[in-house]
Length: 115
Image (cartoon, rainbow, N blue to C red; front, side):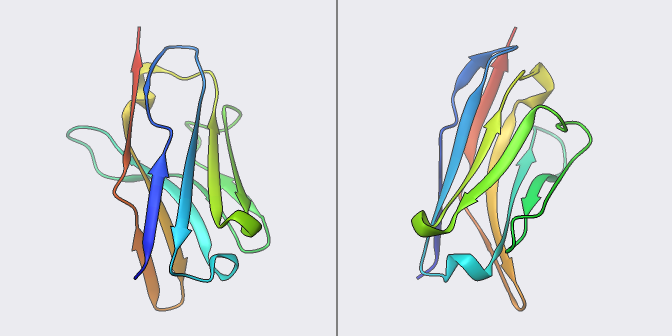
C-alpha cells in the first residue's frame, strides 16, 4: 500500500520559516519525481515546487528565492524548506509522487502564516 505522509505544518508568523517533510512508503522512492503542491481556501491546487529523479528542481514564481525543495533517497523523504513566509503562503500543502502511469498524493499538512 502506497503512503505519502506529510509533516511539519504549523502556525507561524509572517517572515518566519518552516520545514515540511514527506515520507513515502510502498514505492521505490528514487524512481519517482516528487513535488509539493498547495491549496488555499477557495482556490485551486497549485504547484509549489518539483524535484526530478536526478535532483533538478523548479519552483512557482511566487516562491522562488524563498523555498527550497530537496530529497533524500536513502530516507525515502522529500523536504520543503520555507523561509520568509508570507500571509499568502497559507494553505494545505500536499506531497505528490509521479511516475509513468502512477500518481500519488498525501493527505496534506496545514501551513498558516499570521501577521
